[in-house]
Length: 182
Image 1 (tube, rainbow, N blue to C red):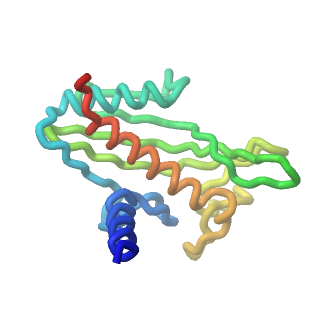
Image 2: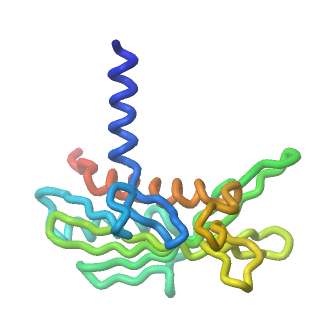
């Protein structure tokens, strides 16, 4: 009986934490695929409070955001371009990490935050320093999806791209709801 409750609890937790799914048209809302964004509610928090907490989270987790990497319109919007490393594979005792370039658009209202991620590319810094785009565009040799929309290069970054964005969203939500009383 305990196993059933554990499985149900984990299932509910995974449904509530899974946010975005990567498709050939970019990230979509996993629950409502007609939308490319997710709105979260934070009852009792003003637009400015949410904005400040998000800004603090971003600056404590990302370095080198000056220039075009970080733009804000206080207290309504933050646009963030990130380069996040992830381990793509291990071979012959060596670890190969790739760099995921993602743009996050964050919009704020009283008690609400909207997140809209955009997949830009994956940079493979080994050998010829290739960039892997979402779909084949005629000039790039590699893409995550084929022309027909099926996954082509799953091992290079499909799951890692989804996980990286969803982990960012989970961390962001936790930082906003964290109790600061001490």
